[in-house]
Structures are given as C-alpha cells and as structure tokens.
Length: 259
Image (cartoon, rainbow, N blue to C red; front, side):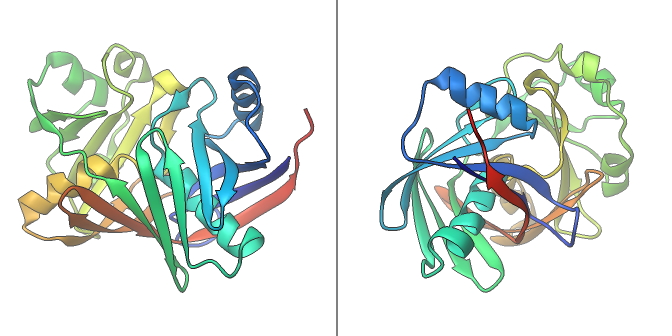
C-alpha cells in the first residue's frame, strides 16, 4: 500500500504532530491494521479507502488500539489526498466512527469540521493534582479528562508522572489547559495508556477545548497552541454542535508498505 507521513498543525519543519497515512483498496483484518500502526510507531496511523470522488472511509489506530476520533491524522490525510492523490479537490468527506467529517482547503490551511464535545464538571481528586504536579483549578470530563490550570507558564513547565496518570481511569487521555499569553488558550495532552506519553498536537482534544474556552472567553474564533516539545498551532471556531479546527501540514516522507 502507498504510505505517507505528514506533520499536522505545523509551524515550520519538525513541528506539529506526525501521522501515518495509509491508502488502501479495501480494509484487511483489524489485526493487520493494528500491526501496521504498531510497526509505524507513530501516535496515530490513518487508514483510508476511497468510496467516491473526494470521499473516503477513515479509521485511526494508535500503536495499541483503534480510536474513535483523531484530528491530526485527519488533517494529515486531507493534506496528502489534496496534494498527491486528488490535487483538484478543495473539499473532502470522510465516513468515520464519529460520523461524517469534512475538510476544506484554503491556501495553505486545512479546516476540519468535527463534532463538538463540551466537557462537564467533575470532582477534583488528589490523584489528579499529584499526577500532573500542579494545582488543579477545575476538572471537566468528556472523552478526555480536562484539567484547568492557572497559567500558560504552568502548563508549559509541567513534568507529570506517567505512572500516576495511568491510575486515572475512564478517559482516553488527560488534557491540561489554561488561558494563554501567546494564544487564546494553550494545552498539553497525555495518553500513556495508548502508548503515547505526550501527544505533540491533538486535534480531537480540541473538540472538548473549543466549546470549553469559547464559553469562558465569549469568543467564537480563537487561536490555540499546544505546548509539547514539538509544539503546534491551531486556528479554531465554535459553531454550536460542530467545531472547526484549522492548521497547516507538511509532507515528511512517502513510500510503500509491504505486508
């Protein structure tokens, strides 16, 4: 199969989040998909099967399991398709576990249309503060656990315990966030249970963060920055039941996978 690696939500070379993009005629057994994702050894690998003009089935796998939604691998897939497979396309439709997702291109920017997942308040537990190593102002839950911290500096300087994060059950990942100095809001995202101690830039986490911050900041359009070592920028919009997540991408490599 044809294989690409593209960096999503970039701000230059070797920034953003690398994703594997596999273009297939049909899906093999799930075990094969999982083994390919494990061998790729990236936080996410996207597997796409074309179903029509500018239309694809889309699945995402970490190194250990299939997930229901992934932003950076969807952006990477859109970049690959629009630049190397269907260069005339300006918009794409994906059928996924999270329903129909869309992407449209505007110059260098790719805008994802994703579901909105407003988190709801949760009790702050001692293990949460111990795990992240900082005072937690508020806790909220959706697919992910969202922890509100006091500042961008606190988020940037965190050195959380992966061992303790693994003890927080019931969530795909733990997202720490704060009002930003360099952007409207900032975040970091940890998923040690998925084999990803820290994800560089997490588009799907912004399905939680966009409605969360839109309400607090009273703004529909915002800038977001993920403060991992690689780092990345997202340009986001709250649209009620949907959110828009926009960013840039770069190709890192292309080749073929044999199995």
